[in-house]
Length: 306
Image (cartoon, rainbow, N blue to C red; front, side):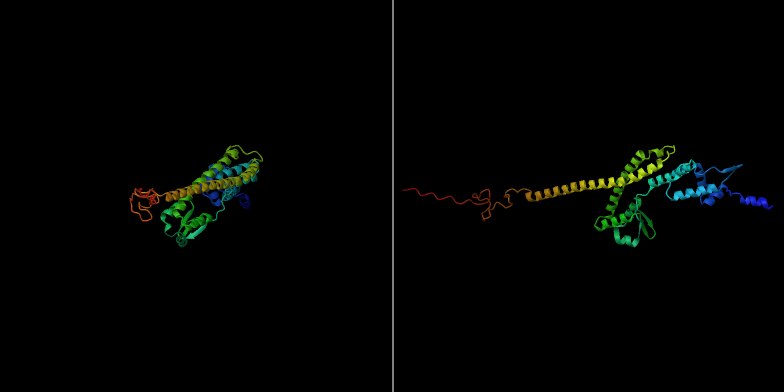
């Protein structure tokens, strides 16, 4: 009687669908989804019952770990397929890590409501808060807000302290976000179409191709920031000089208008004085010259001789 029991205990553990999902910490729906995506090897069938073993549980734990590291399900499927076909899984992991490596190292910052009120005063309204939420920068909590970027929060605070209304800062932020999203689309499309085109094909990558693409991605990534920084600096130079030239032109026009006056009124001299000369003559005196001064008297003629 003891031998059959011992044999049963020595046999590798097998799980039904519900048991495997519970052991892996996922739902049965997720497990079936992995099966459909071919992330999980087929189970052993016994009649209508599907039995899963320790290898299935190990695979599910690997999937969970790769998801935590930021890998996509498509990338995980590629890795699993590579391992099953004898390809270098480490190369594929390195390629995906290079592609999805974060660009931002922003540090979130939390501010309570007292700090926000002291910083923004009456400008902190439902409207400005809703706009910041819509832009994806803050999450509202019971005791305050959390901003995704300390640097952006510090810049907003500094601009408001310089007298720029918070609503204007948020509008500038929204427009900036639209433009930088367009720039990001330009560079991601360039890399997708010109460098990573082979990944879109269903065929597996040739040996060594993943390592070559990884090195290429690592070389190209810094160039996007270099080009963007240089183009932004040149654009700022152009705009600042153009705006300053326009400001100087407007000031010159105002100065010329002020010096020229609006013209003399009828009966007034060009210098703004009335028809009266500056020596006290009367207005309209026939002896006055056009310039407003009385000419000297003509010399007396000699009396005729008798």
